[in-house]
Amino acid sequence: MPKRPPKDAADLIPDHPTLTRVRAASRDCHACDLWKRGTQTVFGEGGPKAEVMFVGEQPGDAEDLAGRPFVGPAGKLLDRVLAEVGIDRTTVYVTNVVKHFKWEPRGKRRIHKKPNAAEIAACRPWLDTEIQLVRPRALVCLGATAAQALLGRAFKLTANRGAFVPSSLAPLVLATVHPSSILRAPDADVRRRETERFTEDLRLVVRALRGTHQ
Ligand code: SF4
Image 1 (cartoon, rainbow, N blue to C red):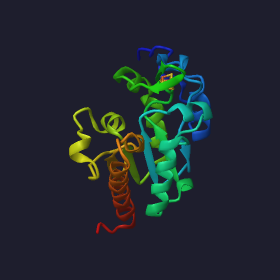
Image 2: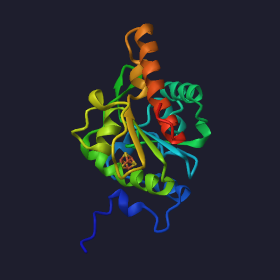
Image 3: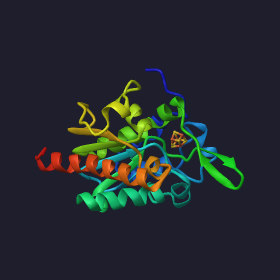
């Protein structure tokens, strides 16, 4: 069999993977150029057998510095909504399709830049391994980048958010907005309405897990 290029992330996955071993291996990943600008690899985090996995786009500024996913403003919003729908954050697994922060400078700030298709593909072995190891009952894509990476590039978040979609990734798969998009809303009214919609989407997941779809 032809050998893959040594930079491929798949070559770094340990033979007998556990989340701890895979997380450690991901620290040395150079499978795309994003490692050069990010402070560190931000691997997923949460229960090794979590019932629900949330997948976002990439770590943000706060996550890049902390080395942990969803600890910045968007993560705090996610925490609040999880509490609202009765999900304990410590029982879920949170991760991203891309494990390094992609950014560009604007003055003294580091501004989020969307990862491209090659970066998403390069990072995919890490996410696939997380999904295989955690085997969540419900997988929630947060935002269009995660949804299209996992459900296909033709997936339209605007048309299909909040609906369960058939997928081999998990028994229950649903896409909704990324909480950071709610924080970017132009005013408090829109933010409140979008937070309510986001809460309803996550409530659907809770009901489906409990076997009640009302
Ligand atoms: S973004 Fe992913 S593929 Fe690229 S260097 Fe980081 S961990 Fe590796």
